[in-house]
Amino acid sequence: MITRKALPRRTLLRGLGAAVAIPFLDAMSPAFASSTVPGGAPVRMAFVYVPNGMDMRNWTPNYTGQLQELPRILKPLEPFKQDITLLSHLTHNNGRALLDGPGDHGRCCGAYLTGVQPRKTMVDIKAGISCDQIVANQVGNKTRFASLEVGLEDARQAGDCDSGYSCAYTNNLAWRSETQPLPPILDPRALFERLFGKGAELSPEARVREGKFRRSILDFVTEDTRKLQSNLGPTDQRKLDEYLSSIREIERQIEKAEKDNSRIDPGMAKPYGVPADFAEHFKLMSDMITVAFQADITRVLTFLVTREGTSRAYREIGIPDGHHPLTHHMNNPAMMEKVAQINT
Image 1 (tube, helix red, strand yellow):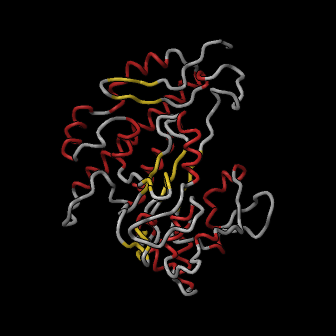
Image 2 (cartoon, rainbow, N blue to C red):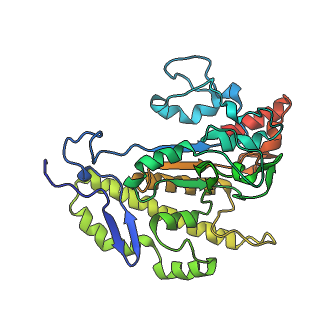
Image 3 (cartoon, rainbow, N blue to C red):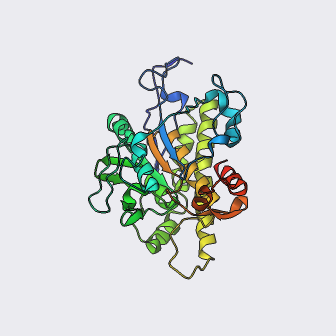
């Protein structure tokens, strides 16, 4: 059905202090509209950073041209290979020492998106504006958040993290200016509340009280949802239902992670809301990244999977050794095999 009416792109479902952005629906653009015109599907940019390097023997294809059989590390992407452009044999010269001595891990994360050689210092840090922020400065006014910065591990912003390089280089991908990094959000609850509701600034105890009061963010937008669905076609109704179900599932996962954490006594203060299981933490954050893109909350994102030089173990895949020590394998076949497994 062709109509001159279109659902506003920024339609929200509201209720009792909660506001849920909804995903891009067919009803948000006129019939036959091209994706190149206003109202078309947005173009997104995300940088996902995995530290400590890749086993390039199992990463780079031994051929050029259209992707055929993918190398071992890229095998999980096999169903999507027709949507992938794989670039190889590139270099980033400003990530090298260039007479600054040791500190590869301190340099590489800081140089990755800035393209400059980070100043070797722990005090007067200096890198450069990162390319994600260059894009965010151009398109960020179209979304609630010009960009989002997400991470999973240790966001210490001061001190020496590698041979005289500040931890600010190691723990940040995004740089608003040459001296101002943008720290990533690590806590799933904090990211959820940043995307969907207030509370990120509250103490853990206050958040618990707030959570009991609000129960589920979706419980308060039920009436709005019913009204909206009555005006949508079958395809849009399915999209909206899938989207709201994914938000509900994220809420459930966060609650489960917090309950699981409450049973663990590590003999120290527990981080609020961060799952003890790394794979669960990763899934929660990547699910929310997906939702943020679906709802057009942001179009620019950086995801620091773990920090450079990390020695975390991947016991969930049967590797108790630290990631970083394994990469200093000295051509030991057993260690190289474990690195390939971690990369995959």
